[in-house]
Length: 114
Image (tube, rainbow, N blue to C red; front, side, top):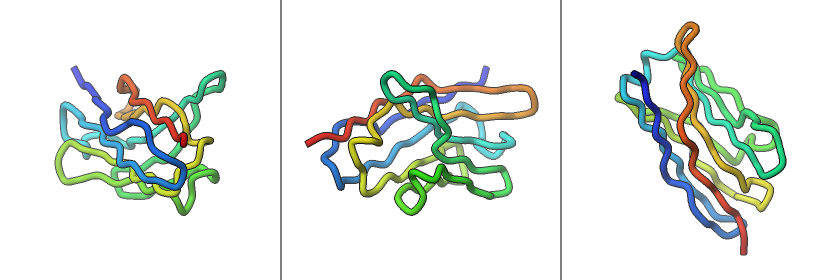
């Protein structure tokens, strides 16, 4: 059974940075695509960034130039978040897709507040 586990969330001041990690139970390259989503209180879950197996990336307009998605050569995907604002406060989830298989992690909370 494929599992994803996020880590790295926490409390950060506006303007600060955080790096989220997503550890898969299998090679990250076994997936067609992997992505980060977030869900703020009272709002729908939204796509933050995605990366395909071939390395193509896509970002939400709200995070372009501030966030960066990456992966290592093993089982991990990352989201580097810079210049954080209170509007980035949300639970962040990673997702992996392989054919009809879609797997979600349990989420890691990020709070941006002074």
